[in-house]
Image 1 (tube, rainbow, N blue to C red):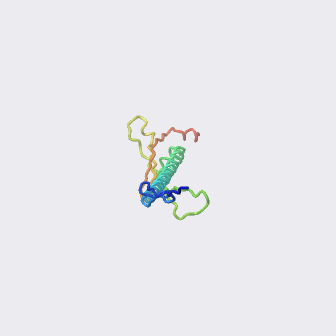
Image 2 (spheres, rainbow, N blue to C red; image 1 turned 180 degrees about the vertical axis):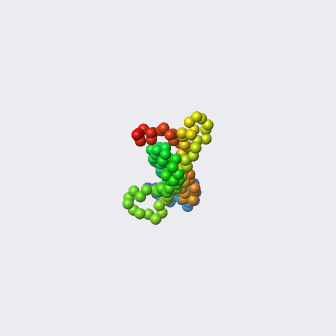
Image 3 (cartoon, one colour; image 1 turned 90 degrees about the vertical axis):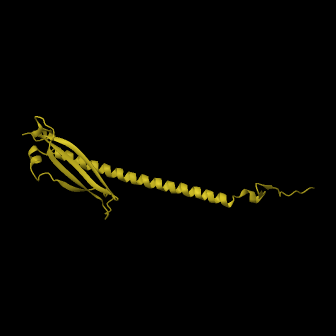
Length: 164
């Protein structure tokens, strides 16, 4: 009987058990690639979180502006033109406390209401007002602002609600 030993080398490694293992440079390259992939994944998740947070703030600011505009549309013409009747600014909470847990870092926004005469020249420009609502807030360190503009007429929707 002839016994042969497997001592021939393949790619610089002896055949047998040692040929199934990875070399140190191969392990280091795979660790480097895994580290880059995990870091990229973490950066992507962080960006998605920031974008969702900013989108939620913009949606809340739009909700505040629409609510305020709907309230202003129901004021009578006399109330709208009475100085001091419509507040010029007020503070609103941006992140609602849905779970009943009080937080000390509640973020606030300032809503500003401007009622001015219309700038276009027509026969009915004395019967209209231009309403601009602006909401300002700070998102982390970045100042954010959104505004909405509309017109209110003397014979608008409030005339149908408050008929005499």
